[in-house]
Length: 391
Image 1 (cartoon, rainbow, N blue to C red):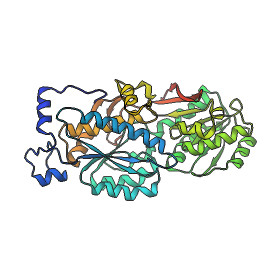
Image 2: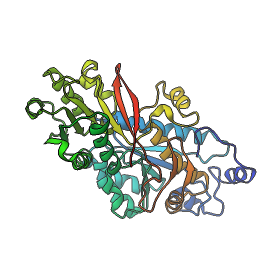
Image 3: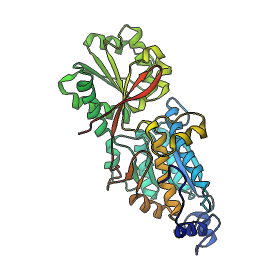
Image 4: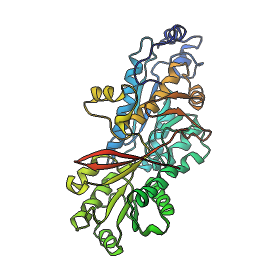
């Protein structure tokens, strides 16, 4: 795994030189150009895909990942003799109804050997069966609905923990660390938001005072705010994304529900500066966020420095996970796994150190190492608070 460029062994270096783009190592030119030749060749135009939101209400999360992918590809391509890889972007806007067409487009492009994504759980539910049928491996750095790994898709992998860990950890953090006893739980009815909120509800037990559901795209939360006040809640947990979370938080604070009276706790889908922008810095202060993702500044190696130099900004939510996911695919290509079948087999047997964790997978595609962190908004920035025990 690479956080900086590695020196290859003499044997590996020779193999990379033989596999440099344009070489076919026994495959016909037609096989090499189509990506259907034997492993060890370097197909012309070999690509990996990024599948997620690059535009739309929650684009920041997708852009963070895409930047991590781009950094990994640039570092890979800079290595002497490396098979040159490009990125195909599949901008879903985070919408499940965009996923079928984009997934079909990806599987029909035989130059695309693997996918980083899909980024969101709802679009994953739609796209992953299409990838599985085509044998196109996908590694998500951010889709956390637990049931995604329970569908029998042998092409599905994920590099961070799922919500079956985050939900109980969030509930424990709210009632244990924060000491809250009357928690109002809200979800946005999405595959991700409702799934996570339901897990939090189950683990809160008697501490859950009331439930509510809002809709993505909703802007008026006055009725919800009034209900929170009437419930006597001392904390709100919101399952969903930053656009709606920020507006809800803004309207809560404008209605006089201060952070001291009602703590606002939300999730990784809201862990973005867009939350602070939507709520306003003053209203967002003190907000708490859970995420099964490593604090970006704790990534190993030179990742933080490399990312900052490349993009002029520090890495954000899922950037390091996107970098790790891309590097698994790139390591496979460098190892000669230049067909979809070979790359899928390579990923299934992967066991290397990434910048976020040791990267290896169980039979369902889940990572062997998981962690959940609590973050807080402090001085207009999202900063790490503490790692939450998960057992």
